Amino acid sequence: MYRTILVPLDGSERAEAIIPHVENLAQHEHAKVVLTQVIEPVSRSFVLDPDAPPKYKFDTSGADTAKAYLARWQKKFELQGINAETLLMWGPTVESIIHAANEAKADLIAVTSQGRSGLAQVFYG
Image 1 (cartoon, rainbow, N blue to C red):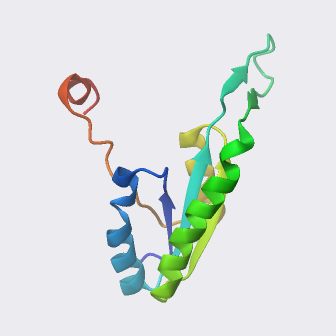
Image 2 (cartoon, rainbow, N blue to C red):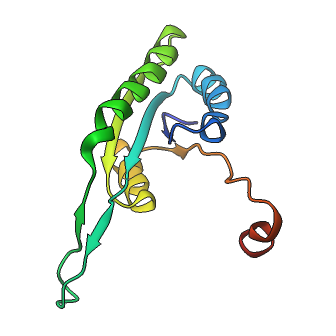
């Protein structure tokens, strides 16, 4: 049984393809949906101390657009009676999604495949 489903979105149609599946699952399981988007750093500063945490620089100009994007999806879920929340994350994508899943106590992270083709599919699956 799923109580919380984390849905990372990046604004692409490929990422949004998971939405109908999440809607069905959330309705069936009465699960909460946490919609998240990650804003990645535009640069990373390196320091000589290997134990020092990395320092990131972010372009914050897209934050309002990302918040509005997530809010639109939240409203669509809520109109179907699905409890939905949004979470805008800052940082490296994979680490941020894992952090979001832990914070939300997500039972499931719902994503689509990257849909690679050609040589990329041979090397990366």
